[in-house]
Figure 1 (tube, helix red, strand yellow):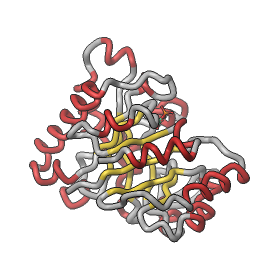
Figure 2 (spheres, rainbow, N blue to C red):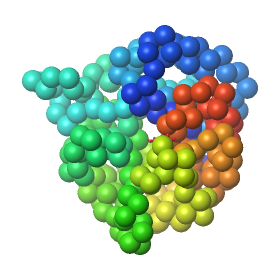
Figure 3 (spheres, protein in one colour):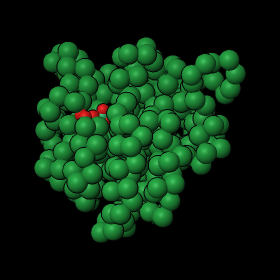
Figure 4 (tube, rainbow, N blue to C red):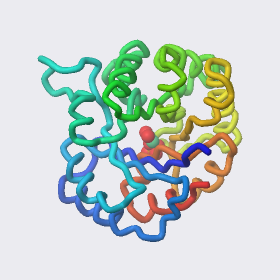
Length: 253
Ligand code: PGA
């Protein structure tokens, strides 16, 4: 059975003191039903080790980086390598978030390189995909997302793809308060799983967790997560409020 995942994406938020406060709250969560469910917290890079330390005793909570670079090492000032993450025992990394694609010109080819390197260093990529409003309005969202998967993930072997988490995040729903309806989410998640099935077969397609992201909140998570092909969420704004994120964790199937 594939894992159900509540992933927090703090983005570029929180001072050190605010990060500590939020992590302290997550560290004291004791009623999370962790059978087949995990929590991942993608914190800003300066807080990775702090987050690891604070959540060390929470066996089902993991820490993620929000990005890593396309090269192994070298003269790339300001970048973070997959090997560095591995050396810090960071188990997950967000790759291809729409904000990285838009503001830092990350394209599908670069993202394939990042995915390959993350896997080489045994860091699980949480690969983000999703269409803009204009693409959805033109009715081209399925082709668009399929192309993102093909260009950045389908170079992987079957043994590698099962180690990837996919997050479908329609750009028009991110930070806008406008979520996809649960039917729209299910439709796209089913489409993603079908693309995985065509490429890798149904056993592999069934094993990959596909998260929904875009204005997930404590009060809409149950409905979205109840869809058969939705395996949890990648949560931005609502993950900055501990009580809200805990409600989302508890909404997992
Ligand atoms: P949001 O962000 O929950 O604030 O819409 C989601 C994301 O960008 O991962």
